[in-house]
Image (cartoon, rainbow, N blue to C red):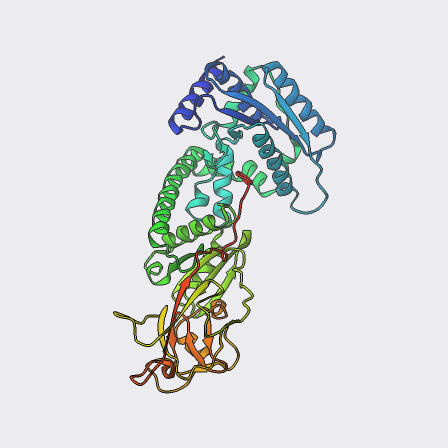
Length: 476
């Protein structure tokens, strides 16, 4: 029992060192019938006798290899019976077509996460080992990757555990043999037309023979270093996110571009990735191409937007860059008529209060949300509306008429928000562009006998950012 005892010691030390799970954990073992997954099953069935853990085995039969697939299922059932581990087998149907391997993987994880949830288990446990780690790192490197990709397979990622990354395939095969079982073999694993198989069968042995006999150990150490570096940059990104986020609009994730330009590309990559994950609640599917596209958007000018995966939309609006899940909603605003005796009115996300005065209020200080207008020649009723083509006014402090469109551009008002800015007019004349400027001609004069104070107050509403509830652990 040397292989099994040695393996159990290594596994226990690994679990304790990495704090993979707590006592009493309920673990769902994914077992295909190959040597790696059967080694996982043998080790954890023995560990269960020494630790207070609950086990459930799951085998997914994709039916891709006919009777061979059925034999794998029967083998897993037989081993589970002898080890007294409960097992659930599920069959999935996959349609013919390209990308079959990825579709099979997605179907497999859909089954696993479903069982994890309905039985209220804590983790899915997978049998990837040291060779799998080496292959993953090399494949990522050849595709082009960064720190995250060079970290390879994570020991613990959300609800997934990979406790065997310190084991070689030979060690696991010795454990399975010592327990008296024979593992299933998949003939497709020998087909070197598949890149990963070519890597496993030819390239890695060549590198071991000619460059680094301890290649697996070195790549494993590299993965550990890169995982630590990845965790560091993630933590820094989370701190920057919390510190730099501003409430430009309720619910929108926004940041000032000026400060972001001081970051290095690595820091910026992790920052944007964190923004992405906070927006769509998904850590996967953010790639270097997304980073480059956001960076180009940030370094551009004016207003623009970019669509990413998982329905994330990134907006560049002058000095701000913002993230939102889905397109920001643009409300359909109907004009509001305000009679002379009316005190309150609501338009869009604003509530307005109207006060007829004879004198300026004591201590009155005009600002963009509280104005006093000359009311002697106001033509009632007032209209609160959105902008219209051809709108012009004379911004206070100026002497010439200006197109409202040009005023918004100069004031750096994002395009998508311009229709939401309330315009108060008395027929064809703009009195106040709410939140920005009154018309010079509407300012009270010493000769003004009647005054109108208008106070605008934003409503406490958050309609702009769509809410999203995702099933926990939807993807690996």
